[in-house]
Length: 359
Image (tube, rainbow, N blue to C red; front, side, top):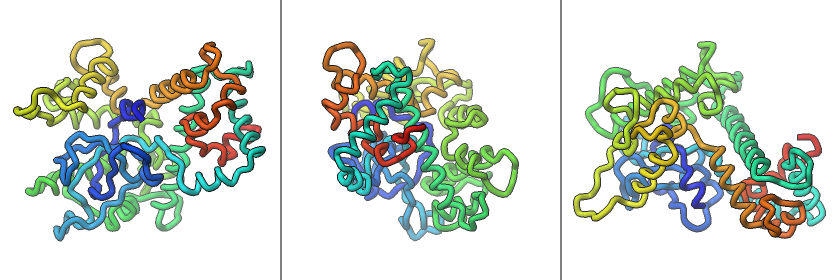
């Protein structure tokens, strides 16, 4: 779990989430909680500002107040990471158990063969990393396609802004773009909703009444679409560049954090974030993030996550110390392989896109 926690990307827009929907990343993660998040507004009910949490993949706010604005809005805000860290559902596990030993071995060996892109009989760090990244993108796209069907209420092949609102909030929400609201929580939600609308409009390339499937994918996963890159950078600057100099300083990177005057040191999550700022993002060591460095922060670092998992698998399964895995080494410790991101926790054994002879 440590590698995923350290690699959390924070490009997403904070979403309102009920506190009872959150789960701390300890022990076994329920299968319906598949998205990382970090609390960005005041912690409540034992949840702390900046705390890492698991949230539902498509959190849907429920009634939280008698306020007409908050009727479908919960006050706790969570910054979502991309929904790429998957754990097998109960159905996946049941199907995995149903697979006979012979069929399981056949599918596993087929996957091993596909990962071995140069067909030399060994899986290298690079081959494993590329495979895991491909798996991340494949499932992200598949999930976006499934969401598209759910959002397209009238089945006309497009998702309108009204349909998006109905799916997310059970009703159409329309805020004035200029007039701020007096209540801090209501104003926070207004700002978030307007950001979503702006991203929705930017994804709509043909200015039609709704988003096509390709445009919907750009809206849900702007990091995967080239024409959304500049928008992602500008959105991040608008949110974090408080002094308007076109860069994000360490102070701006940490947001509204202020050390508790009674504390002797910063909390662990702040120490981790400072380390990431210095060692992962600020490549030129000038104490601030330029637009390209900022992009490496706000866009999910799937490559880094995949490399970490590939190295972990080789460290654990390489029996002869040659820094690569043979089929025999994998089969010797196949339970580890089948519960890793290399097979998406065994999910690939039930997806013929991966185990079929032709990928």
